[in-house]
Image (cartoon, rainbow, N blue to C red; front, side, top):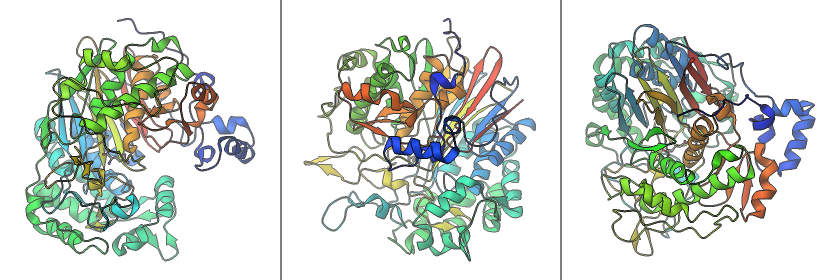
Amino acid sequence: MRRPPRPVRSRVLNRPFVRPSCVEPRRPGWTRVFACLLLVGGLAGCAQPAGPARPWIGQAFSTQAVSVSHPLAARAAMDMLDAGGSAVDAAIAAQMVMTLVEPQSSGIGGGGFLIHYDSKLKKIETYDGRETAPASAVPGLFLDQRGGPLPYRQAILGGRAVGVPGLLRMLEMAHRDHGRLPWARLFGPAIRLSENGFPISARLARQIAGDGLIHRVPAAKAYFHGPDGPKPAGTILKNPALAETLSAIAARGAEAFYSGDIAQAIARAVSRAPHHPAKMTLADLAGYRAVKRPPVCSSFRYQKICGMGPPSSGGIATLQILGLLEHFPLTASGPNSARAVHLIAEAGRLAFADRKAYLGDGDFIPIPVQGLIDRDYLADRARLISPDRANEGVVEPGRPPGAKGAAYDGPSDETKGLSTAHMSIVDRFGNALSYTSTIESAFGSRLFVRGFLLNNELTDFSFRPDWRGRPAPNRVAAGKRPRSSMSPTLVLGPDGGFRFATGSPGGSRIIGYTVRSLLGVLAWGLDPQSAADLPHAMNRGGATEVEEGLIGVVDALRAKGHRVAVSGMRSGLQSIERTAEGLRGAADRRREGVVLGK
Ligand code: GLU
């Protein structure tokens, strides 16, 4: 297929990014823009990208590339590739460094999903390292004494929300399949940095200072706060406890984490948590299994797009949105036109209705995976989208082929997500991966043990186990994986070769961020950085949410009947595209990731 002409990376066309200071929440739009003008002394300041120089823009790498959420983790990944390692080797080294330098987002105390393309076999596999609920978990875990759902902030703190971490078992499985360097070697950079210390980044410092819960957990407070309160940016932070933990895992494999003294420390931290202690046993930890699952794939404009199946909702929702949009001449209008934003929002609305009704852990509930992305089903659903009128408040879940019983139609609680991290990597052998990992909310449960934070992933379950007598598909159950929105995605070109890897953090907004990145590259022919720079637009079943860069189309959206919410969004897209010129990378300006390559 001929690719549409590559547009100039135009700030005027895309108005890609607004400084974080310009998107301070909770002030009406124009006041904010005006405040920003005063603050930086001119419109140019508002439209200028924040953060470090981005030397990878305009570069095409011929051999290998990494796009990782933190510069030190990206360096570790590149070092492994330089040493002849594979994409999986690089991802593991980066993830270990991220446990140290970006502890608020992801780490060995959490979980993740990795999707891998093997260039020799031209084969895609997905690895599920999602946390599981311990055996003690009950459906009403997040209900208060009166049977109502707990406030999210209350639910995340302490032992109750901690799921059995899945990350290390998953990475070990992926390494067994695709690793080239010895396992222990991958831990070297993180161990050295833990011993010698790293400077707290601006983003980490902001998140420590802005977090209202760390100080309530003594071990976390002792690490993240100094005598004068939250540690500021630039403070050199050492973590000898993590160095010791990682050394044990380097020497003895993931088993060192899932049994013995580290497992005992985790179980103790959860059951003796200062807030909401809960029961996590050694058997829960020893029994954790990572799972290799088939990818969920479909096509969009002659490209094969593959994502993560259940327990993530990300792959299916992303493919549904793209499949619905294929019924409209999307590229006739620009990515920031009212028409494109309207269609994207309407497709999102339909996908989120199905997500709530059908998605959860497929090992526990029947999910009509193929039915949900079936072309005829999506063609039918697309008929519900009017080019002129928003389906505000009237969208019901559909009836995909293979669905059993009536669709669940209870309320859904969506999170926006300030933690989580994504990386995309392509190695010299042509293998590629897209990998998202998380400890759920920023700093997870705030329980800090052996130098790392434990997740609060169980709050991704539906808090209400039933609705009008019907069980929620994503209700809590022992051993079950909470539904995720993480959407690590790989795109293969018509020749079956790797074309594009993308993904993002951001709670259930991840789906919208990922769709925007995919559309930017595949529908509008943007380079990946320009696609990541596009102002976001999505609908998760409520208001149509847009970033400030789309303020110009808000009136037109309202005229079509949309309820519109304008706010800054903290996506963290990390993407790599293979083009005729080489590998081009993108790192979202809204966070602190980078691209490295050669
Ligand atoms: N826990 C969320 C999920 O798996 C991700 C949270 C975030 O991105 O901040 O969907």
